[in-house]
Length: 88
Image (cartoon, rainbow, N blue to C red; front, top):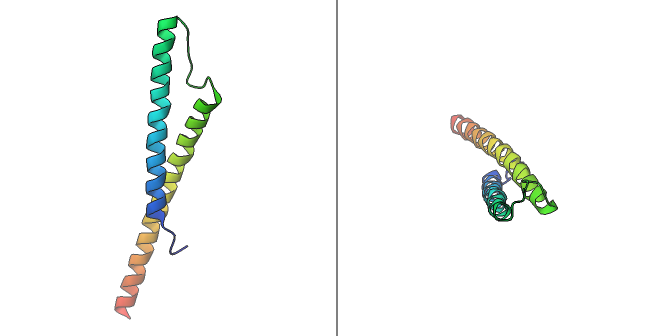
């Protein structure tokens, strides 16, 4: 686990979470505008792909937080090993 690219994984999750959130709320905004013109109502979870966008957002947000924690723990461990090598 020492050489896992947690920084890259963290960044990838952040990018996917950002764009899925933009898509989720953007789609709702557009569908709400259409529904207002036709006197109908819409929900954020009307179809399967809206639910999928939300699930992708939640999973990648959790992944971002976890990989960020792992990244800092890995960096801390490497820093301790470097200090230990310098003393020896």
